[in-house]
Each structure stands twice: as C-alpha cells, then as structure tokens.
Length: 246
Image (cartoon, rainbow, N blue to C red; front, top):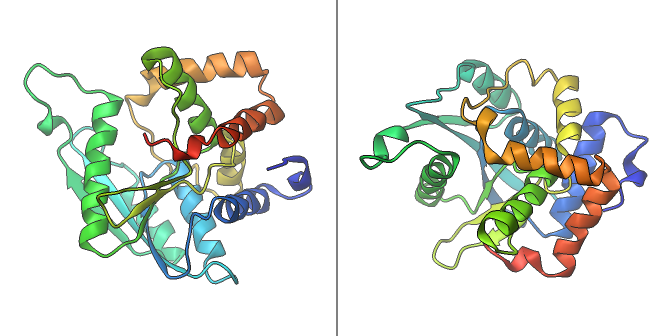
C-alpha cells in the first residue's frame, strides 16, 4: 500500500493503479462478476465508475458493469442527464430509480444521513438481487474508512469501520469499495483531470454532517499526512478489521 511507488504517475493513472491494487490485495472482484455501481452523481462514485470501466477487460479484470442512480424526494441529481451521458460513454448502462427517502420517515422523525444511507442501501440490495448482480460497488474512499472508525469509536464505543469487502450471510451479493486505498484529494485531482467535477452533484445535508467535523479533526492530528493515514488503514488490516461488518 506504499504511496511513494505511485508518485510519478498523473492523477488518473495513480488512482487507477490504487484501485487495481485494492482489487487484488482484498480480492474484491472475481472473474465473471456482475457489478452494480452505486452512482450517486458525486465525484467519488463517478471516478470509481471511470476506473472500473478502464480496468474492465484488462487480464485479471473480467467482469460486467452497470450503474444505478437513486433519486430521492429531497436531493434529485440536478445533473442526472450529464451523469447518464458520462457513464454510458464509458459503456456502463445507466438506470435511475426514485426512492421517497423523506416520505418513508415515521411521524416525528427528522431527516439524517444514516436514514438516507440505509434506505438507499436497501434499494441497492433489492435491485442487485432482482437483476442478478453479484457485487455492489460503493464509492467510499480511504478518508471515509478512517473517519468511520473514529466516529464509531467516539460516538458508539465500537472499534468498527467500513470493510473494503463485505459478504452478506443472507444475500447472494457482496459490497466492495474499490477506492479503499485512494485519498479524497487524489479523487479530486482525478475528477478535475477528467472534467468530472463539472457534472458532480452534492447532497445539501452533507455540509452539516458529523463526518465533516471528524474529517477536520483527523486532518489536525495527522497533519494531513498521506503516510500517517495509510498506516492507520494498515493497522485495521493487521487487526482483522475487514472481518467487521458495518
């Protein structure tokens, strides 16, 4: 997972190599997998889709791709047409599914990130199973994984984070996070290099999330050091954190 070996590459090539390394290191993809890309419309999932489309067909990367975008009653992707055009240009079939996330809230409950992600995950699983997909690719990156660990530790008293690979006992589908080795800053550089930021959507609730607070705190105590962040990620593997579920 050493970062130094990749410094000579441009932003897109660097991210592609880190994705390929994560796929091989963590055995995220098997030959013949049918992968459903969770295409939120944001920079992370869009960069992930681009990288998976580029790797597809290379020896050792034999899989199918399709994308599912979930529209909601509070955050419809205003650039959905541009997202569809991008993905289909990369030969990734695109489907849009509307889910009434706010409409499903029980009386007296308020909208929050956890509720939204749960509803979206339910629909992703349902769609994947109904259409014969073997994997769902989520766009969480290295910073997300580290932030989740510290959020769980500080808020819930649990040593738990997002695994790069999650196999369900009850469902015939796995969750994979191909961006597990990629920092957010690297995704931004890659998105800028490929014109993706111009078409990316952002969630209005995300600006006020607890995750953003934790992100600032982690930047402070790591000094923003990529090496420190990667050592933190390596410590999860050493303690078998990939075996823990969300």
